[in-house]
Structures are given as C-alpha cells and as structure tokens.
Length: 86
Image (cartoon, rainbow, N blue to C red; front, side, top):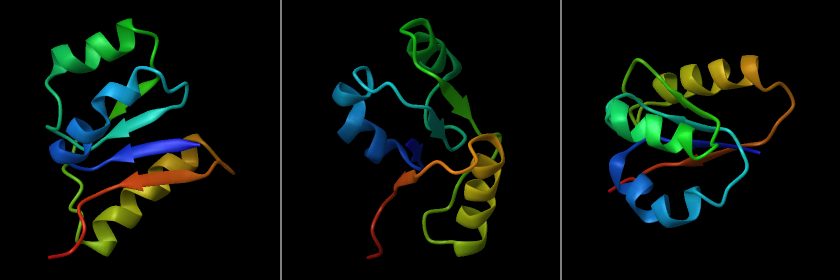
C-alpha cells in the first residue's frame, strides 16, 4: 500500500500514525517543509514529495499524481488522504 497525502490537514490527522507506518508516503508540494520531510526520512520512512500542489478537487491533477505513483509502485494499492468536497 502507498499513502498519498494531498493537504496539511490530512497530514495533521495522521501525523501520530505516520511514524509507525512501514509504507511509502507521497506528499503534495508545500505540505511539509524540507526539514520535516528529512526528519521523516531520518526516522526510516520512505517519503517522496511532489514538486507541485495536488488539488483535492481536480480530477485531472489527482490522476496525474496517481499515474506518477503507479509508475514507481506498479500493482500497489494507493490510499489517497484528501479533503472531502464542501
């Protein structure tokens, strides 16, 4: 399983559990500062940070991110943690 986090609120809700996860975690751009990403990596997590923001409500934008993840993790399930629509 792969975890895609698209916004800061989702990260905040999962931050306590993230350290115990032994799965690759992908973040949209600017959710975490570089130092925070490095801290997660230093704790043994497989963390990747997109260089663009992932818009929770743009199907095209989200599909682009998912396609990139699928290229790196073919056949794995991707769990998307995003904001629900208003």
